[in-house]
Length: 91
Image (cartoon, rainbow, N blue to C red):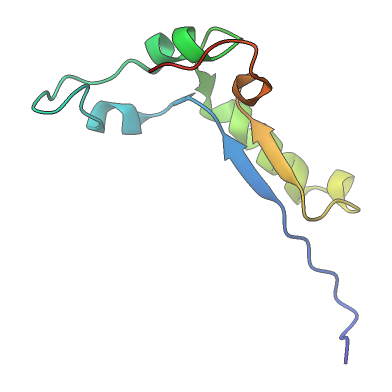
């Protein structure tokens, strides 16, 4: 029996985003130097820069708002065009 509730299941898929996690990822095995997300983004993001946490937050805010009330089962990709394939990805 259906309770009448409508569930919305959407997912957010961020790309290279300038957050503190990058300081915890080693550049290569045995190295503790932090990775610069903007350098990574220059190689693989068509916008040529890393996203900011605010960029992702705006997408989440949209999904939490009434503006997305008829949206469900969607994948919201916020990656500066990475999945568009306009630039080669880093190796």
